Image: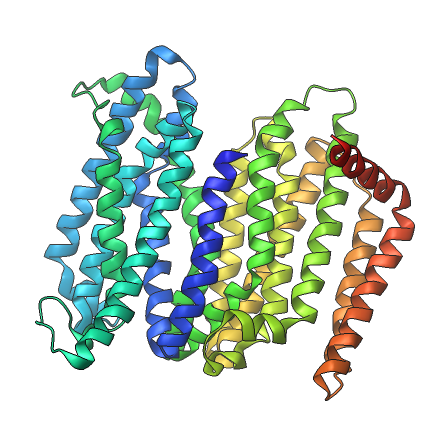
Length: 483
């Protein structure tokens, strides 16, 4: 629970403060630069990290191997990070030409350093979790976000304010750097985090075991394919929008509105933290199938409720979380990416079959299929309909992964999901949203009331059908309240 909060709470703070701030202080073009560069960062990180976090947890189960796996995993990532930095410095011109940042090579170099430092910090953070130091883990993750926010405010608010009355030296503040300060703040924060991790890094041992390294690579290397495919599915759309339209503003509008699906993404992240250990814990129970099916029902109902809360109140979310009206035109992507992320959550639910049966290699097949759908549809749709094509590609990607996993899992490890009922709830939620989209009263108050009524219809219909489940949850809440 603490590890989940330690990872999710900082993301909430980061979203609530920095998304609003960046969209307020920057226009759509600079925000597009931010979104595209961080999309590249996510993809490159997967390659440099090389699945070493999972590899560490896999072999660190044996207490006698903890130091060996830590040293080998950290050493490999460190070598890959050094190679990465050498490649960036040697080939900075062709790299900047390829992604059209000829005039901003400093952005690429700073982001490259962020990738290198963050990747090396990966295994030390994993060791903190392995050692059960939940408090230290949470504090470091919170400090990472708070330091970054503080630096951003310092460079983008305080220094510009001082510079209005007193001209600051160029080495301290350069007004022309603009969005580059975001990357600089991130780099400083990453460097500080690296220093904070020195106690863990001291555990490193300069000993090399070729045979053990081979085992570690054999386990971790396939995970790079899965991670790379996942990063393309999650971040590739921003890159494709820039690549295929050449319009950085479209990237900014799309990325900002994509982030309005925050309730769904946070819900899925929290669910994964809880579900991963749970699914193995109950896997040997006689009624494990019924338990997994019940979890799926809880997830679908909650997810659809979040979909409706966000989609029906998109005007409120947009005004509250985006600081510039220039971004508001991208609202249409929100319901699409919401449903796409909802299907991704169902896919994680369905992962029971290949995890329990130790068939994780099939996850690579499904992730690669999703990546192929992402690439093909972005390439096809974005040139025709802009960032809306990227949104539809996201929905199609996660839908394909969900459907494949459902039918594949039904053959390997049948679970009695109430498929008909879950499809009916999904159809009801989508239908209510469509009604709202077509019937929009001009009065803001009447529109909010109307959308609240539609949401109430979903709650009442589901509540009546799932009466036993609702009463059970209510009873558990009352019992905890009494304690």
